[in-house]
Image (cartoon, rainbow, N blue to C red; front, top):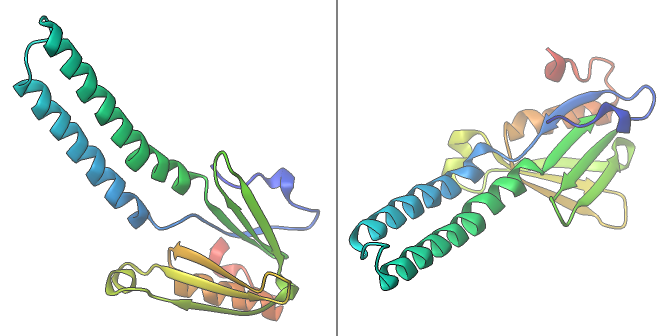
Length: 173
């Protein structure tokens, strides 16, 4: 699900399309597996659904399992799916959220500084991290968390900001 090209201005091209690193989905997958295993175990040890108390316990187990899966698995997955960071030859586009949608566009000429940081050894091993974009606008600093290939992304944005005619070659290659 890429960024719609109809939302780009004339002459604008997409150089990078990113969403948060896949590591953001590891914990939700673990919760899904544990919730399904726990619900399955509880269903096998609870009374048969033919009895009234057994029917209520099966419904309660199902409702609790569904609530846990929705909150701790589906919600983070939707957040990941609908978090988009797009770098074009003119701007940095940030779109976050599914129901509560937030969007921000930073013109590249207004960006003063782009830096990155690895917040843990795991981030460093996976190559992801936080991209820090310093803007001349009123909002100042923008933190983009869990960016995959954060060093390459920082270098690409810096190259685009500098106005290098070869900018974007890395992303399109």
